[in-house]
Every structure is written in structure tokens, then in C-alpha cells.
Length: 142
Image 1 (cartoon, rainbow, N blue to C red):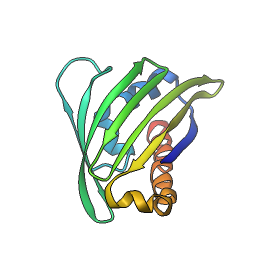
Image 2: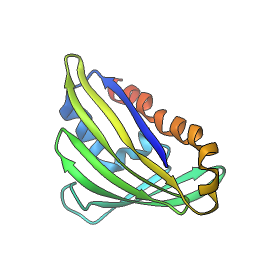
Image 3: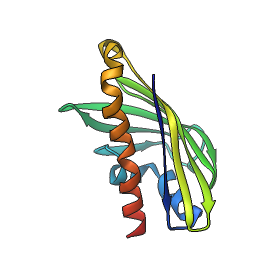
Image 4: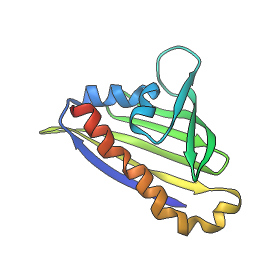
């Protein structure tokens, strides 16, 4: 298991940061995914499902996502399942004097043959995920 934990302060109100992150169709703008397709209609919330595509080591993968917890302007929990990993975690939103602190926490589990090499992949996976925070900050503050 690869533990993920990071946070960043964004100089915007929590409502704006939360609403941008909660809209999964924004994911390709700040996450390492090429496309996203929300499944179904209705408001974003627990049970919302979506599919994403991402590239890792020059191979394209499909990823299934589901929102597992949803507290407006406070937290979004999720579960991602791909052929080579699962990622269960949450984004936590806190009001700060300057705006919003958004934290990401969770666990990535590699599957199949990659499971044996998890310790080797851990730094690359953490870096890949940690690089999303500065990109999100740049997009939202520009």
C-alpha cells in the first residue's frame, strides 16, 4: 500500500475550490488524465460514477471512479479502480485566513504483477499525485 498525503493553500473561497474539484469533468485540467466521462445525470454526490483514461508508462488505461462521500465545501471521498491499481481517498477542504487549504489523503494499492514492485513505484506515484496540487492552484488562481 502506498500512502498519499499532501495539501496546498489556494487564495480563493472554499466554495469556489470545492465546486471546481467536485466537477469531475474538470479532472483533465489538473489531474494526469486525458479524458473523463460522467455516468448518469443528477447532482454530484455519493454514488456518482465516472470513467477516466490515463497514460502510465506509455500505456493507456481506463479507470472507474465513484464518489463515496460528499460533504459540500468540506470533503469529497472517492474510489478509483484501474487494471493496475486501486486508489481510495478523500479531498478535504478547510477555510483559512488566506482562502482554502485543500488536502488529499488516501491509499494506492498496485495490483497484479506490479504489486511485487510497489515499493519501487511508490515515489513515482506519490510525485504524480503530488504534482496535481500546484497545477490546481495555478489554474484556480490565474
